[in-house]
Image (cartoon, rainbow, N blue to C red; front, side):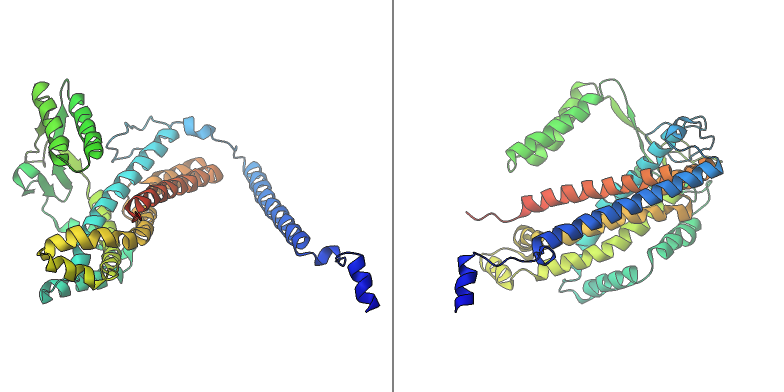
Length: 382
């Protein structure tokens, strides 16, 4: 009894410094930070020593050196053999973005169609969608790239006898020759009108959205004297002439990436739709809504809350999987920068660091946009 009174009179009992969980936790975190810094310093020091021993100068000065090799696909960035390695980086980044953005759009469209078809009451449609999903996602992506590039696209007709799609272009073993837009004076006003129509449709939101997006560019097209025309490809003895050529490497990679990712997106869409209470469907039917309207206006908007988070992962995977383009010589960032540039310059640390940071930035930007879109689609209690 006296011991208890003595302890209470002296306040809380003292605890040994290393038995205090706060101090012990802080000490462990400090040691962990010191260890990480030591490991990073050791790797950097070791890399600098090895580069100095090999006579390779560190730094990013190599980006201004002439590359000396050609790149056959560069739709937007001007490039020649006299361009610098910095220009090579821009071309590789451009080609990666083109295949990633186009692939995401195509994979989303195909994935939603197949996912909805999986739930169709038509037995044939449902089973065909099921077969598509199971076949596409259970074969490695690299093998699909080889299949589309070597087995499918290489079986197309030769240059002198392409498949003619009329106003939509020509297709042969050398690629797809699409109609090429030819911009005349004042064509920029059409783009500005399109942007204004999109912004106005966002503000108005519900009324006349399609009319604004299509109508304003059409008015600008007429008022500026029809400055936009299309150059159609034509057949010749030595292959198609004119138009915009889309190379088979791009087509093979795009189709393989899109269909492979679409198989996973289809299952995500199917799971999102099944997550919605069946009572929503019954209530819609009771109000006289048809199946298509119920799916588009009631089920899909609610299912998006379930679909978007895993959909983000598939977009990230598609962007990173585009690096497999090196297998069929499509000049993406990994192929021409982390591959050819690294081999010619020997600047392994700088080249790989830039490549990794680029993919990291693309992933973070994609996640940021999808998180914003997810928050916009979330239900708000009123």
